[in-house]
Image (cartoon, rainbow, N blue to C red; front, side, top):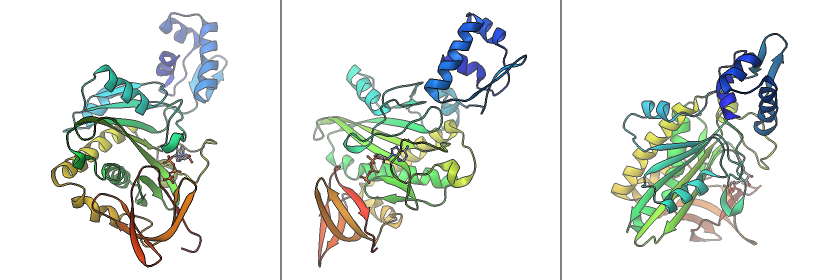
Length: 319
Ligand code: ATP
């Protein structure tokens, strides 16, 4: 089915006969595959008697060679999947099979894209970036400190350099424009953090997506913010270079060296928030973060630090 899509991706008309000949199948088999493309991938295809078939919107698909040619110094190998449950899940399976890190897993779509605490990440075909970078960490808990915040900063800077000037951070690792979520980050770890472990840095960025019914909170995309469509191969290359820059800084100098820059870009600095931990809620004012990336919250008259992947921040109405 995706071979057919690759023939159509230029957005030109192709006759059923030519498509059938290229694929070695009958014209009616071409017709069936077209129906599947529309139903499964939510693509719209024009069918015009005498001219053939045309994608309503031309597609640029992910291409490892194109990414490598644009990524200059960034040499992490890239695996691209047309459709996968989740790039993080695939990354974990690859670690299990002994694939040597660092490497990147990308997908055109995720059928079970995931956020924190088992939440779903909406991942339509060929519109966004679904990206997992795998790193091996050798006996250095320090290398994990604040790591998800560092990834958020790198994603935010990539968006800004690409023209989404309003991108900012929400603790611990969301990237927002105003109140709308444009990118999410999910770190997963396997192995012994005090000895040898692998960390999967999962990143989802809304790139060209213009509509979805699958997201139950305010969201946006690079296209909605700027009015432009973006070349995802170019963006993946830019993200890789930015991540490399921030990860090197983090490795050399620790999170403390990045703390101030992170705080400067925190959209909710000084805001009145509620911190949600399961059924518990703590109200306070955001003071910033500490040297390990923990949230500093003024609760009453006392400053407290909160850490952990299960915590969520919400703005309070009175802020
Ligand atoms: P937090 O608890 O820190 O506020 P969150 O509620 O945003 O985080 P995450 O685990 O970071 O949760 O992300 C999953 C949530 O993000 C989903 O429950 C959904 O509301 C939203 N979401 C899912 N897909 C997308 C998407 N493509 N773009 C923006 N938001 C999405």
